Image 1 (tube, rainbow, N blue to C red):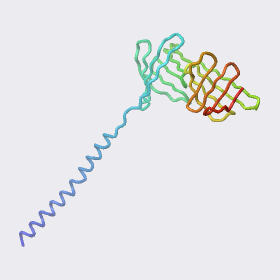
Image 2: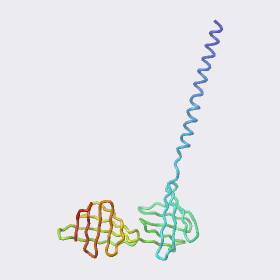
Image 3: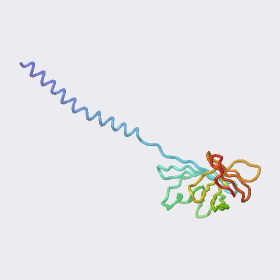
Length: 192
């Protein structure tokens, strides 16, 4: 009888000790999983050239809200600032502002770099009363067009001997002067 009581006591002690150890292993695994799940910084790189041929390289760390700038052989970090739209970063000497592809870098209040895209906006109306609004970015060689103020159609410039030629997978805009043709999947949908 004493052997049975001793055996039961030992088994009970083993079960109790086993239950106490289980949460420690679970917590250790959870901690490891959380450590592994750390995300990498979101980095976006961009560069721009001004009208004089000077180049600026920017590496935006969106996770830390900083930008590393390489300009005129200098590399420096700027900290993000609150802005309604566009970008604004600064440190004690430099300030970087911009919107879209337009960028301005100042040093101690003086503009040292500026890039602005060459944008041309125009609108045409054909005999049917249809309107074609067009925004050409001559810096990036792209165009955004809107037929009758409908959805934006993004096109990329193609090489041509004269006139214009922009296209994407479905649309094609060709023309010379104010004579333009817009086609969708080969079918003319606007002509002037």
